[in-house]
Image 1 (cartoon, rainbow, N blue to C red):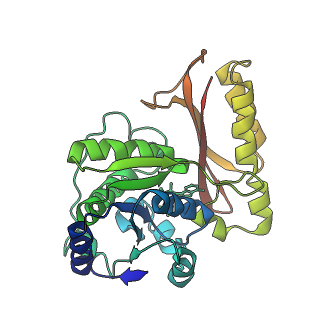
Image 2: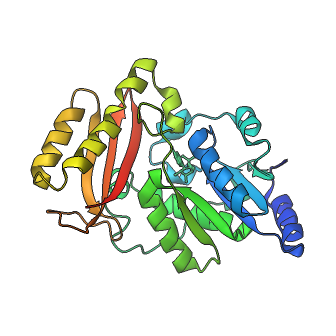
Length: 280
Ligand code: AMP
């Protein structure tokens, strides 16, 4: 396993791998790794000859400086976790390795896909995310790239970005890994007290409750019940039923609908997101 700090060095490594016609699997991360990240790395190892993991807290996808500053960083622990799974870890020495001397972001036209949910609550987030992932794809030229369905809207937008920029990569979505309580694993969970970690399992409980009753209770009523279940624990930003392909909001559900039920909320000052995708 090799730790690479410079883009120029990474380019040399990739050239060698390509010269041997080896397939590359890539997993972009922001570090503070957990079993959720590792599931993506393992999926890459199962299907690709060389596994590249980036560990980079990308400043352009944070809309709040405080969130960027408080984002957990744990490179040594991360390296330990990745041993035996990853071949190259790209941990840029500074933002210059990614953006050059001046950060300039491309404006993508994602139609309405980047407007709701995270797009509405984290202005600029997807622009920064799409730019950094596109830059990684250009540098690493992966055959397959692995993304968690926990960040479902991100997964949808990465697929759009790939179409727009014409990257020859297969984007693979991987299921959300959860704690036994149901709480989705997240690097941000590290900032929660044991009490909050336990209490935040209400998110998944509420999502599964809503899924269970989606066919039987009118959506507006179901949403109200869901928000009530979360009320004393989470400061909810959204709980929304949307179409899984175009991310438009549902008013009513019918048999065969493919639903992206999406959640964001804050506990102990830490913002958590989760979702489930299901067919009615
Ligand atoms: P992050 O480090 O938060 O940027 O996440 C890097 C990748 O890991 C993204 O594709 C996430 O969707 C994915 N990921 C994060 N948490 C989980 C999880 N609990 N299960 C599966 N994938 C995850």
